[in-house]
Image (cartoon, rainbow, N blue to C red):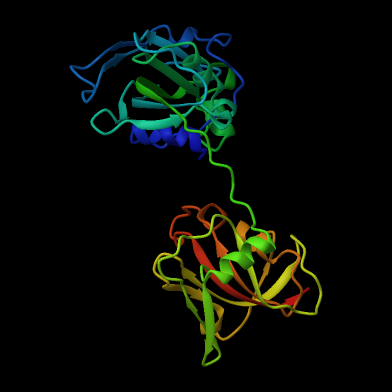
Length: 319
């Protein structure tokens, strides 16, 4: 399932497949939506009453404003907060509703525009508070992994009818620039000030210590402990390395190849950015301490340790 339609589906407690149609609400065939009527509930937590002629037949994805809102104009680079309800197009039976819960957030970004152009273009023409209907034909659902159409593509009953209300919008804050690798002089200054992690080998394994009462460095730190003499690693090299990783926040270890008793093999183009940037240019045999800011680590990936992170890495082989 594509991300954009998944957000719409979540609001309706419904599994729906996004389409790749290039039809837009302003130029597409919105005739199948003409029979859809909506009567708002008593408040934003109440389901609306939606009616339409069945079976609703459509040959292309389309979207249409049912009721024009009176709020601010919706624009690009906003997070749209909405609630939605979904019905089976063949008989108008309820599939799911998200009105009792919290609004779902959908960013007006390029991904949304590419995946659901009809809904995107309709939203760009309307205001906060608007009620919008969207339909997806079964033929298009099948093309993107949905159910098979029950009739020919020329007269295919739509899979779902989704009606949503735009509750509010907020500007998407600009992204902070990505962290940069610190220069050798900056690393030396931090090291001389005792502001970098240290390690000592205990029973053949590195024990990492985080400096007390020191701020995390403002960038990627590559602190070479011992320089190797072997082959130089590139950003796409296959390497073998021993490593131990800990959290900057509390110094707790979250992973170590030393504990497994064997070095790990991987490609530098398939690891976190802090490893790719930190190990590129180093020679086989090098031992290095990497202090990696959050945005160059796992950056919120589910189940991954939160950054900033610190790694001791022994680059054993560059293949």
